[in-house]
Image (cartoon, rainbow, N blue to C red; front, side):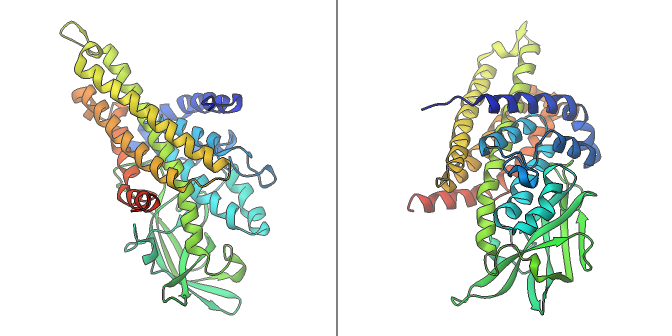
Amino acid sequence: MDYDLTREQEMIRKEVRRFAEKEIAPVAQELDEKEEFSPQLTRKMGEIGLFGMFVPEKYGGQQMDYVSYIIAVEEIARVDGSQAATIAAGNSLGIGPIYYFGTGEQKRKYLPKLCDGRALWGFGLTEPTAGSDAGGSKTTAVRDGNQWVINGSKIFITNAASEISLGVTVQAVTGTRPNGKPEYTCFLVEHGTPGFKAVAMKRKMMWRASNTAELYFDDVRIPAENILGKQGDGFHQMLKTLDGGRLSIAAMGLGGAQGAYELALKYARKREQFGQPISKFQAVAFKLADCAVQIECARNLLYKACWLKDRGRPFELHAAMAKLYCSETMGRVVDHAVQIHGGYGLMKDYDVERFYRDQKLLDIGEGTSEVQRIVISRHIGC
């Protein structure tokens, strides 16, 4: 077994880390405080190739392996969860469905703009009454000649209401299957389409510098060619998209855990009590040791899942495991990190406070921890 990264993967880690520390770290706290999405920073991330990393060059992508993409997300998350969310959702949820299921014309029309950071694309699945039960969608699409008419709403959609958002992929009910269950189809809806409105959501606890939206569809008419794939394939497309998305959320958990651990270790080495650095006290040292062990385990699990995906082998079980474990690992690590910081860990002047808030979304997004356990239990035959 070879646990070494390739030279290219090591270079990606080095360059993305340098970028994150130089460009993101100095502004992360301010953007978080203002709840401000930065199109300029998004454009810079596009310029260094962080969008479309797994997309072929003919569509404007970087044509890299999935491990490389996950390393990039991990390194951004090590510094700031909001910008990592923009990258993760932009790739896995925005670009992914169009690349994997779109027609050649759809790919040529949208992917070049999405792969260089000029534009973002949302993934419209969650609804006010359909979260973990993705099959409970109420949004509908009805065929009318050579058009489809969409009505309904979506909520908690990342990258869908910024000034550079180009459109969204929307799952809608388009009929009933022979077994009596709803038929779902996905559609590509551009901003500016009459009846379509995207509203940015504010007052979030976490990812305050990423863009989150509520979407409204009021008799939105789109041409029939805006179907993604075939009619009735929507639910399958959404599940496949979520499988890949779980890897990027896992990478955010891994990177966030690494960042919080490094902040705690640095603080513990400098902070003195009773005449010595608190890192010398067993109570603190054991917390840091536990963090190091869990981060190492999380990284190995996530990279294995990506390795499986890169080789075209079944990876769904390992994706669910990685998402669950990496998300909850960050939860344990940030809890220790705040405890080590003591009262300072509760102050916004210290980055660890932001890491503590940002972690909670990872237990919820891309399928809650409870849903991951359902997925895993089914795979193992429960």
